[in-house]
Length: 307
Image 1 (tube, rainbow, N blue to C red):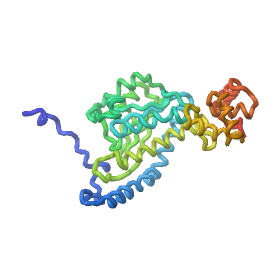
Image 2: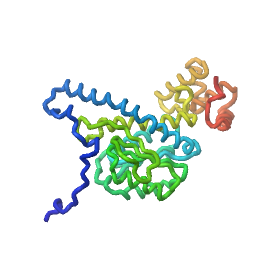
Image 3: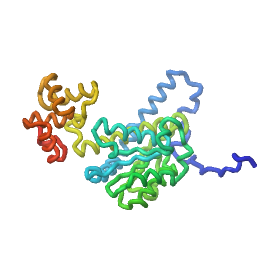
Image 4: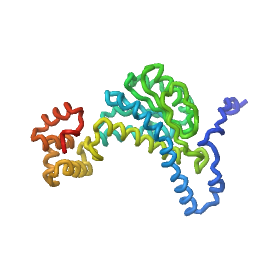
């Protein structure tokens, strides 16, 4: 008997919605380019409505995570394949956007960072695969762990939730999936975004991936807004470290202070590029050190410190 024949037969996943065949794309190979583009766009337009139907579950998860995150807890995304890559992407964008320490929002992917560029789907079958990463994080009760699995069955992800609860029973756990399912063990919050069958059968990098990105955008941005890293709709925790960010920071500061562009740049330089610090310096007539102290006493928020 050869090695391939000796391998066990995997579970039948044909009942999972993201594995179903989409009747609208059954003749995909016969379609011309304009038809393919139109059909893909029509399928993609279904995604925002699917996310909207999951709004209550998304909000409940964020509300449960907010107090923990505000108190210094971490948000940990964990997934395999496309789901893992999207979690790492969202985590990696928080430091430049909101000036969070990279340890505050963490992305873990099956197979490690090399899996971001080279597929390592075999790693997703190991329910204990996340143990080393979760153990090295030193999970605490204020931390939140969100598993991401489009089909809701990935052993690596479901196992990670159980590992997290074993390590710290009081940590918060959630699962983001794109198919109807019951809450798995060790999951406090289940978010289901029903995106339906993919244009290309089983390719969850399509609608399910788009939905996942939208939900992760919502989770991380809402947590940052709620913890004072946004004022109005302005990215006030921005730190000007390159030409594009200096331009954006100056425009934000001009909006907050009414200063002309050149004066805004000069103030930013005195604040080491920190927008919130510069705004408080202007409105309170203090130096950067005093402005930082005022901000710290106000929980890092500009509310009440600027008009």
